[in-house]
Length: 148
Image 1 (cartoon, one colour):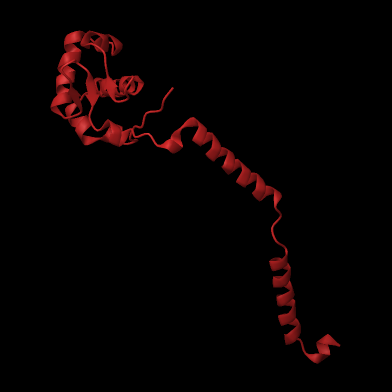
Image 2 (cartoon, rainbow, N blue to C red; image 1 turned 30 degrees about the horizontal axis):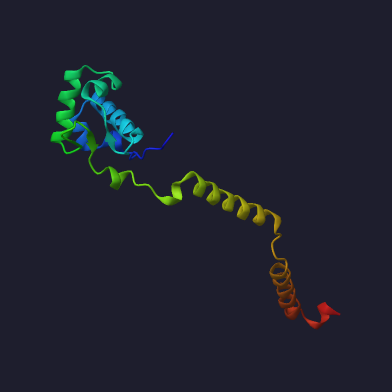
């Protein structure tokens, strides 16, 4: 299972709310999921009837909505019928540090640092010296009668 980035303010996006119904916004997210699973991420390489079936829509409903997405610059269609999600690579970039192996290493390093922090006692020198300094100041203010 691959992750898909989705802006957490998607539900309040003015463009999406103004131009698309709740059902159409759901279809958009479903289309992003399909594009994420493609052989080439960001591309849905299925026929229109297969896409409509996957999105639980009638073929003509899908074609109408696809035209709407295309008009708003959200998708591009190729001559072969592939659906390319616009700006996919800018929004769904793959960082080498996000690979499972790199994530495992990063998390292990974090756990090691946390474990080492728990096992290493805090330095006592600074605390002890601080108290000793306080006592010296108090003693210097004491009168001779108090110290005898």
